[in-house]
Amino acid sequence: MNGKITSVINQKGGVGKTTTVINLAAGLSFQGKKILVIDLDPQGNATTGLGLSNTDNSDQTIYSVLNGAKKISEVIKNTKFENLDLITSNVDLSGLETETAGDNRRAFILKEWIIAYLNDSGTSYNHILIDCPPSLSLLTIMALVASNSLVVPLQTEFFALEGLTQLMKTIDRIKNNLNPDLFIRGILLTMYDKRNKLSSEVEREARDYFKEKVYQTVVPRNVRLSEAPSHGVPVLIYDKTCSGSKSYFSFTDEFINQEKLRGSSNIGRYQVVKYKKWSTPFSIFILTLIAFSVSSVKRRGGAGINLAFGISVAMTYVFFDKVFGVLAQQSDFSPIIAVWFPNFVFGSLAIYLLYKNANK
Image (tube, rainbow, N blue to C red; front, side, top):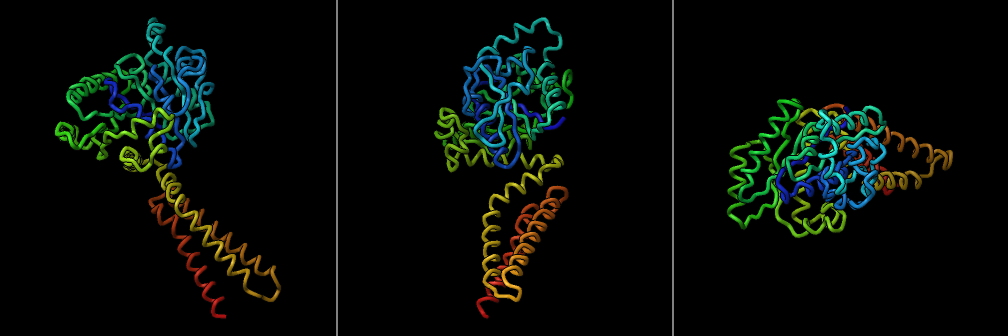
């Protein structure tokens, strides 16, 4: 299958599950990944948190896919965020368990529809993120069966670890009976309050018990993080400088680093895209300097010679940029060197030409 399917899951509500889905999706999309979010919670909070309505007609939601009325391709909606698509949800989804009571394979419905879509569609998502309901219901079982991996937000409060034990037992049963490839990608500590001794104790216990499964990033309690969903945008956009945004940017980086450790073939491309956001303005400035230097030189043959020289320089730059970009994407060559080396070479050329012209 194209794409990796990750469910964000916790049977307890109010732990930052939907907030994690929304901001992880946004963070990944910022780095050039194409993301599909599936809102599998009848409350539809991921839907509204990404700026769409959770009161739409049910034939345009995930409910119409799971009851067989529509294909996934027919209900995918574009959000206002680049590289980020969404399948919405509404309250009608809560009736699915009763409606499918006679279907012995109902746990596989979501997985089968996703596989069919990925096999038949020309669209390739780098990640599909599923926002699960806050319960161990049929919808959650469907998500576990359909997923490759899981992210578990863990609220750093009393009884959090006790509830997690129950979730782990459910995950083990799904793994043993329905989805042997399922694994826990990591546990994300949320709603952390450094003033509260209990938060520190829960963090310590989680790290002692789950070891490296616990992400280094800790998401704090943060007012801006709580405000963002009411504006229909991720906090990474609502206020990118607040502590909540910084934590989710950090979590996104950890998530991507996991891809690197697991041998993802696309990690180089994502990092090249990330670094080019910073290097492109420098590239434009350097090429402008070279163009100015070349145009100011009088040569035999007139302006045509200067134009030919300028075009040659530009084409050489594009060649360097493409070659180093491919190296970074398809080998262990450093993406940051790949992006900045052409700028270094042609920046040196620009300085040389300016110096030469100034001394004529």
